[in-house]
Length: 231
Image (cartoon, rainbow, N blue to C red; front, side):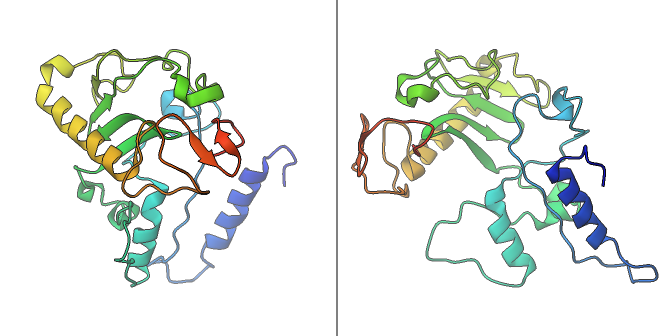
């Protein structure tokens, strides 16, 4: 292989090679699903200007949390019913039936333990917050976020991402009912999995902790948020 290729690209090519059916094989029905995931930054998508990563379009949104219910469904199994499952079955999207996407599916944008935005359908609500919040510790200034986006909001700001993918025009005043709906969804997320200043009903910790807002007391002591420790 070309020595200039990245390890990821080599892996992708090898995987695709194994997925190509042999000559004469029945190709009417494929039972192979190939998924690659990554954590690109603000400038890593072709649709946002990247010159190296070609992403001509994004058909529908989904999350890796959807893998469990989706693959369980495709395998003919049942997801556990004794716990909250955050994802949903997106098998229609994998088959290209994009019109079956759930228009009410909601995405909550957390940075560490801080809820910062809510998206539902074409609407995205940036929640009120200070710039470089003190409770984020040494991650209050995040190099992975473009400086034009690393700002605070004095009040909730609403964007229509189909008409305004760059989030430039606040339309909250024109759609107060949408703002209120997304604020209620944000509050439901806080009650469920918490926020920087509260413990959610279904919030889980990786080590013993007492409810904050000010700090977490763990085996490490009064923990400050650092890059080496989870929020």
